[in-house]
Length: 187
Image 1 (spheres, rainbow, N blue to C red):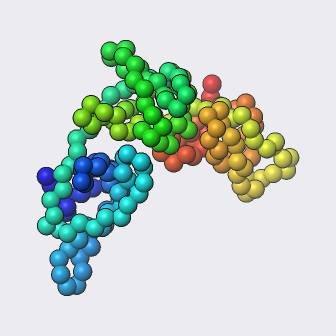
Image 2: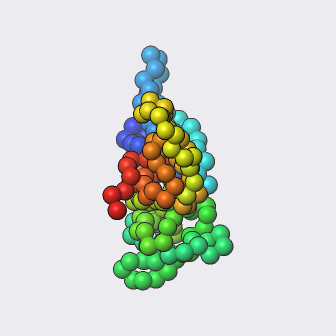
Image 3: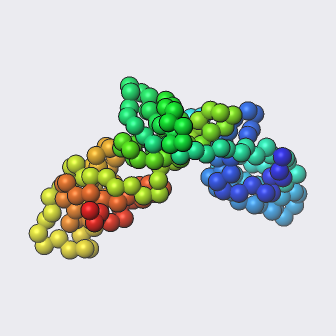
């Protein structure tokens, strides 16, 4: 158990048997009364966000997650099949555990799986991933850099904004934390 004043962004805590990831914290000291910790939490079970206020004297249970590297193999209905790189055991993960990570699922890419009490609770993609553009508007001659960006659909179905010079078939490097275009792949 830790004091509520020690909560930091990214920590995993347990409230009423549910796991929550701290998305943001603000330490508030009112003119009168005790300090509070205002937090924005994401429940790992269903990825809903909640605002929660802790008093400074509250004790909070911190959850410790085990992480393991697993390679995505294929999708089977609504389940996603991963392989442990050390033991070669396969594991099925549901859409609930996957969350927005499904936007980056391509075979043979290694993901970090978060486990709590031997059950998967989260999946983190690599920081960057290379995906092929399957659909985008053609380049318009005379378009300048000031013309802005255009939407592009990638091979996994995610749509992001890209510069005007990107065309169908290009392979792009994407920042998975912000769903953001970084550069055209050099391959």
